[in-house]
Image (cartoon, rainbow, N blue to C red; front, side, top):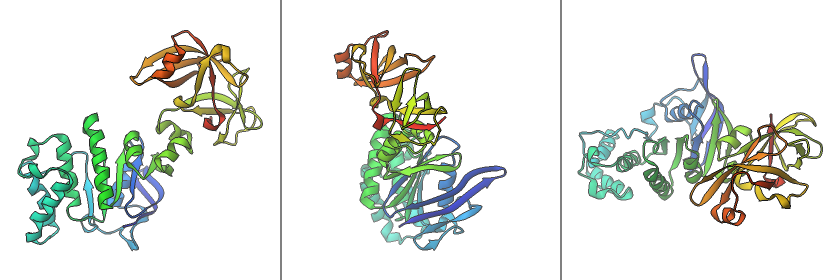
Length: 356
């Protein structure tokens, strides 16, 4: 069912936690609220859930205004970071309890419990206690419990953050598979950009209680609307520069670069921030330096397995460093070592210019 957030604002004393949020979530869509701690994403989720009441604006579900409907009457499923399972109840009873509270027919409950355990691949664990399960299994039980009453919307509050990296990667695939299979409208809160980019249909990047940008994961990564989004989603280099005429920036006294993507109306001579992803810089031998390339020297090389992270000091600057990522094959071909002089080309289509 489609969910709407219309001009929602929430204050806690003198602090504005959420400010004038407008967002529509389509039927069957998975949307992630992404941002750093304190940005308002969890407060916004709690407003949607009915656990907080907005000071302004409204929450819609389909054509109905549910702003003042109690949380327990909204029929929303919610999964928390902490699992919140009853330790003295078996897996099956944990799931059945929620159905009983929703007054499901008693004869229908065992069948529904087994349906949900099959979906999360835990049918064989039905009679175990939560303490006998791994963290990943416990979170699957929490997910099954939230989905069992056939909620209209599923809300996930950092559900994977308490798990180790390998389990988290496996479980996020599982959650996405289940969400798509059931076609349930879902909102997930996370501070983990990889989690958001791999799971979401759309990502809502939040900062200081407001939305910075909404878009598909690939859009946020390849076309960040603000410097905050560029910095928060993926790795990004920011270099100090000055605006020039005709879509160019001056990086050093001798280097002027044309840039295709401007997010500032700075006048010539004014300071700007030049942004480029580490994988978009092209590194070659110093002897091949053309008029549009930057001279640099290798300061640091870090081995990452299938790739290398290389820090380059830009010639003609006091302390500007450009971080690039090169595949293992590219490193073998170039044979780079610390201290090498190199030429770096920055393709204009991959350059972004933001206010200083």
